[in-house]
Length: 525
Image: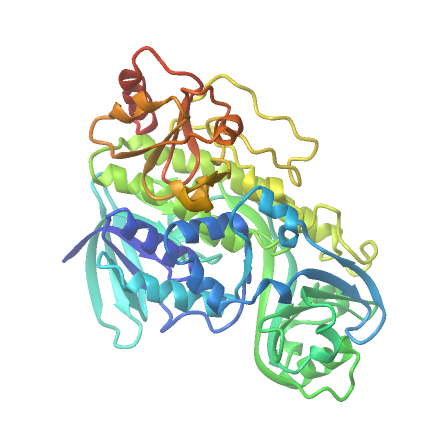
């Protein structure tokens, strides 16, 4: 019987990210995926700046950008009656605008899932601690107090293998077999609307090149649909929403019928179209009641199904894996207690519920749930959700509060106020380097624990936290101290997922003891 610390079920972006992140934390894992290869449909495309920060910190950002589209191809969102017809509205989303540079050194990226997954797979396969098996599915599993016994089956040969794992991550999608086997209850609204994705070849540049956009919404009494930019040339997605409201069923979308609807939405009756694939699906807006079940952890769509309006599904899933990987690593290394693993649910499930609810609100405002719902367009928050992208503020046993209140914001969906209050994302601050170069605080955190001390905080360098490895930085730039709410001798402790775990605004009488106490609390020891 094969033994492995972590078994990952599912080889989509979330499972592949988990494999990469665990490997970077020094943890061996086995990923199994029932399909023979990576995605063949574009599916998710939008990778927000917070997720790109994670990919940057783990060395895969450049490869993803090379596989995706340059920013100038996706700077707008356009509403139109037909692609060649009357334009109704256009917007520059916050995340594509210059103001986004004020809160992160990293920009968002549009990279279709069938282009993204091969990049993540190649990166994972280069890691010596990450093993990937495609054409392999999880048949059964049983857990006890010490681990999980799983039976894996080769989907080609039928050959079965037994695996013993300390922990399992279920990243096996919206129809998660693991979640169903556990009997997990879902909270929210299932099956809120039906849709179909059509992947096709056609040259749409005569109607798109002068207004490059990530999305072209078609608002027409006969059809509500969306052209999805894939390569901004001859490869596109076509999304038809609310099928039943318009009298359609998934079976109606033959290649011939799909071609007819694409031509109608384009407003070009003789447009040469080649349909490559048709994928019907149903949007839901519900979240697992519990993310942790003994030694099994739900992540990605297995934990939360949300409408794609806003592009949060893939991003939330990758950030789930980012939150969980370092916690599993520390527990497996004997540095963290079991309570640290409980903090995964405590931190990610409430956030998953909020994001899912807001994604559904986006969908309702855009008329996704009914043919006669409202006018064309979307609520002002749509694609301007900087508060949701950067503003997650955790409260759990893995955070040591400092008694300060959260920064008030008028709209938590759109508004983000950078803050180093424990629980929040460590703010981006530009720092001067030798030779006049600049670096971001984002580049100082992201894999292990980091202690960031202000200019007169040299004493923090000498502190220890038991066997926990902490990389200390003393930052002389006063902009750092101001942004992090520190006096000249204060410091913050940042977790491997980039969230502030503890803050000492000023030097303490016994910094070594204070840091050790904080580390014990964070790690559940």
